[in-house]
Amino acid sequence: MTLGKVLVVDDNHDICDLLALKLTNAGFDVTQANDGITGLELGLNGSFDLVVLDVMMPGMSGIDVLRRLRDAEQTATTPVLLLTAKTQERDVESGFGAGAGEYMTKPFSPRELLVRVKAMLARSQS
View 1 (cartoon, rainbow, N blue to C red):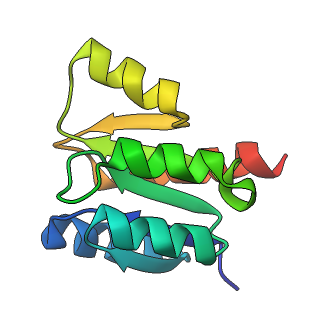
View 2 (cartoon, helix red, strand yellow):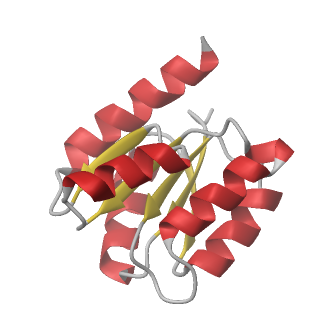
């Protein structure tokens, strides 16, 4: 039995693969996307329990993807964890302002990310 469906969106293939491996080994069903437009399409059509989303991507930023997910009825409450190299206070404020549930900066600990994902899912299911 799976712990839930997670969408990982990051233009860095190595990070995407690392997250997918870590989450899959923990019992999650993981889908990957390597750009914001594909991530948005999958997010809107895939009924995911949680989205891990990079901010800086070509085509469509993670913040834009997040806003579009929040605007859509089917994904308005889907938990989203932003994972980004953007560390400035205004970037964090922008991420939470767009509707992120968590904000982690790169470089990151895969173990900490897994703990946060599990905590976010627990909060969303209670």
